[in-house]
Length: 79
Ligand SMILES: [Zn+2]
Image 1 (cartoon, rainbow, N blue to C red):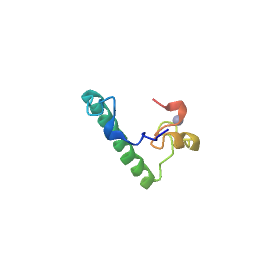
Image 2: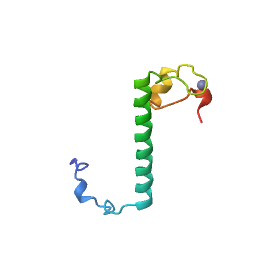
Image 3: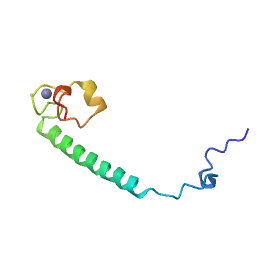
């Protein structure tokens, strides 16, 4: 059996050029929000407040930061 999975330019479905505009715009909006979150996280790193809940001041569990590195609150105070 021949391996043809890398031959993307000859997609038999013929749908690869059809772009769903609204979905693309939603993805872009999400990316911009993430960039803002990353900027904010970087600022907190510089201030020394990264990983501290903004509501109760307790340290955010490392497990949560691993899943959501830009988290500003602990699980109890997550919006
Ligand atoms: Zn909290």
